Structures are given as structure tokens and as C-alpha cells.
Amino acid sequence: MTTPPLPPARAMRFRLEALGFRAMAGLIHALGPDRASALSGALWRKAAPFNKRHDRAREQMAASLPEIDAATRERLLDAMWDNLGRTTAEAFHIGALTADLDRFRIGEETRAAVAAAKSRGAVFVSLHQGNWELAAPLLHRLGLPVAGVYQRLQNPYVEAEASKLRLPFYQLGLHSKGHDTARHLLRMVGQGGTVTIMADLRDLTGLAVPFFGRPAPSTLFPALLARGRDVPLYAGMVLREKGATFQVRTVEIPVARSGDRDADLLETTARIQACFEQSIRERPEQWMWGHRRWAK
Figure 1 (cartoon, rainbow, N blue to C red):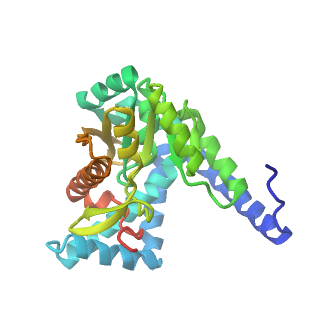
Figure 2: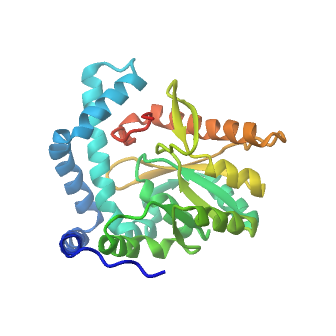
């Protein structure tokens, strides 16, 4: 199917945005991963509190972690923006970062999960905590071919540039969200492939399960894949330690297989979100509190 041409004004705006993206990418590459990470973190700490998402992040953190006092909350929000700024810059250095495994503390549970996935396929879920951009590329670095699921950008020129940064680390492809994608990935996992999915964002087509004590619309697709194809389900987190160094955690999430499909999907989805909640409680300053997680 041929894509209809963009209106001239929108096409011009998109091209200018792509030029800006390429210029930013050139600067970040020239700085190298460590300097780019530090500089971007510092800039985000200064600028991000003026964004409307700062107030939303404060409100959602207060509702989720009421035991934290106001002064501590502000310190955590400052660290959150630092982490997001660093992650943004580090996305341009995925190859250099994952090539240096000394930057990562990788436990035996992660290596065991990779070995199991190589033999039968698996589903890996992650969340927007630490540097989530490195989660799937690290699996690739450890010798596990993976597919990824992502939301296509509105600007096709920036989309093309951003894809160049990620595609080399997804041997089984990057797949934009859609009905045909779901069928394709079900088939891929059934043939022994591994799929990685970011599963902590609001999904109004999913299931409402508890998350910090409140119902949160959550994707059921990881549970559907793992249960339907009888493969293991893992949560993987790449948590920031100091600068551009990280601790990698992998947790196997039990997949409910009672015979009641709907109940199993609900239970497994709830287990995924409970795992995420535990990780966020341990490192609340590294999760992206500003997105609309609970809104209907």
C-alpha cells in the first residue's frame, strides 16, 4: 500500500526536526558515552522541572509512595530527570556501551535466562527504569537473538534515523504495534524466538491490575505470548549504578496455566506489574513517573 504524501507544511516541519535530530546525534556521538551521559543528565535536571510532566510526576510519586516526605520526594525527582537525561544520550551509544561488558554487573540468573531462551524461546518484559534502552541490546550482546515491539514515531524522517540506532541489536526485527504484529510475534515465539516488550505503560486495551494499590490499565500481550506458546516469562531491569555503569537483574515471572485462559492472563499480568512495583520501590528515582500510568 502506498503511503499518501505529507502536506507540504508538515513535510517541511518533519524535515527540520530530522535535521535537528541528526545535529544532536552528531554532537552526542562526538562527546562519547560518558561525557554525553553526564552533560545530558545535568541539562535535564535544570530544564525538566519546568515541564508540566514534573507536576504529574510529583503527584503520582506522592500517591504511590506516601511514606516519602516532601524533601525526599524532590530529591528523587531531581535524580529521576538526571537518569532520563542520561538515558536519552546513552541511546546514541548503545553499541559502545554494550561492547564494554565491564560496565555491567550481570548475575547468573540473567545468563541462565539467556540459556533457557536460546533453547526454547522466551518473552522478556522491561520497564522505563534505569537505562531500559540497553535491556534488549544486552541480550543480543550475550548471544540471544531478539525481536522488539515499539511505538512508531509520527515523524517518518526521525523514525528512520532512530531506527538506525536500534535495528542492529534486534536480529529478529523491530515491530511496530498493531494487530498483524501480534500474530507475527505469536508465530515467532512458537518457532523458538524471543520477544522483548516494554510493559509498564498505560494500555487502555489491556487489563486493569493493581499497581501501587490502584487499578492500572496494563498490556496483556506478554502474558498471552508466554502462556499461548508455553515459554518462560522474564522481567529484565538495567539499573543505573554510577554514571554509565549498570546492574542487570532478571526475574522469572511464573505464568499462570490453570486452564482458564482469561483468569490466567489476568493473574500473569498482575504478577508482571507486581514485579515492576517491587523494582520501582527499591529505586524510585530511576522510574519514569511523569507518564499517565493510571489515567483511564
